[in-house]
Amino acid sequence: MLALKPSSVDSKFSTTMQAYVFLRCFCTAWVLTSFFPSYSDLDTVLITSNMIANFCCEPAGWVQTKSIHISCPKESASSKFLAPYTTFSRIHTKSITCLDISSGGGLGVSSSTDGTMKIWQASNGELRRVLEGHVFDVNCCRFFPSGLVVLSGGMDAQLKIWSAEDASCVVTFKGHKGGILDTAIVDRGRNVVSGSRDGTARLWDCGRSACLGVLADCGSSINGVAVGAADNSINLGSPEQMPSEREVGTEAKMLLLAREDKKLQCLGLQSRQPVFLFIGSDAFNCCTFLSGFLLLAGTQDGNIYQLDVRSPGAPVQVIHRSGAPVLSLLSFRDGFIASQGDGSCFIVQQDLDYVTELTGADCDPVYKVATWEKQIYTCCRDGLVRRYQLSDL
Image: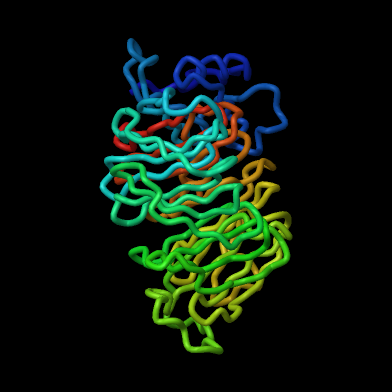
C-alpha cells in the first residue's frame, strides 16, 4: 500500500493533476472536492496530515488497481472508489434503461432504447435470448424469483411475462392507458403490481392474465413502485370488500408509490387503505423498502429521503450529494445503493461516513442497479453494462 503524506511541508495538488491521477486509475475523473464539501470552493486540494490518500496497490503497478481508499479524519468522512471488474459492450447498441440479475446469478436481462430486450450470461455478457413483442420502448424488466421467467413493462401500456428458456411471451396484460414505468412482484409471483403514466397502480393475476383491481388512481404519473412486508406495529387498515381468492401474498404488505406530483404514497396492498402521504421537494423517481418500517425514496432534484412508516411526518434524514436526479435505489446489505443522472453510483453503509463510489460512467446517467452476492451490475446511457466485484475492495 502506498500512502501519500506530506513530510515537512504541506503539498498542493491541482485539480488537474488530481483528475489525471484518477483518470489513469479508473478511466474517469474524480476530484476530491466532490466528496469533502468544505473544499468545494477551492481551486486546489490541500493534502495535509488531516487528509491521507491511500492507494491500494504497489507503486510499480498502480495503474492496474481496482480500488482506492480516501479518508479525511478532519471531516470524519471516508470514500472508496471501485472500478468495474468487467464491462459488457455488445449487449445493446444504445442506452440501457433497465436490468436485473436472476436469483441464481447466472442470467441477466436488460432493456434498451434500441427497442430490444435481451437475456445474457451474467458472467461474460454473452447473448442468450432476444425478447421481442413490445411496441416502442421497454421501460422496465425483472426476473421472477424462480429466475426462469421475466416481467416487463413498456411504453405500449402492456405488461408481459416471458420464458427465459425459449424467449416466448406467455402472458400479456392490457388495461393501462399510458406507458408502464415500473413493476413489482408479490412474493413468489402469483400476483404482480404495475405503475403507469396514466396515474394508476394495478394488481394483476398472472395465472388468469387478469387485472384484480386498481390499487391507486393518483391523477399523476407513477414513476416507481415497491412492495414490502409491514412491521406488526403498522396499521394497514381493513379491506372494504373481501379480497379475491386470486390474491396471493398481499396480506401484511405495503405498497409504495413514487409519484410525479412530488408525493410519496404508501397504502396497504390488500386493504387499499392509505398509510401515509408524504410531500417531497420534487417529483419522486424511485423508492424501495429497507425494512418493515424504513424506506427510501429519491427525487428529481437529487434528494434521497429516508422515512419511518411509523412516523412519516418528518424524514429520518435527507441525503443530498448533488442536484442530479436520483434514478434508482436498491436495498443492499446494511445500507443501500443509489444511482443518479450525473453518472454517480454509490453504496452507502449504515454509517453515512463510509461510502463506496462505483466509477466508470463519467457523466452518463446510471439508470438501474442490480446485485447478486458480491457482484453489482449497472446499466447506463452509454450503452454499457458494468460489473463490479466487491471482493476487489
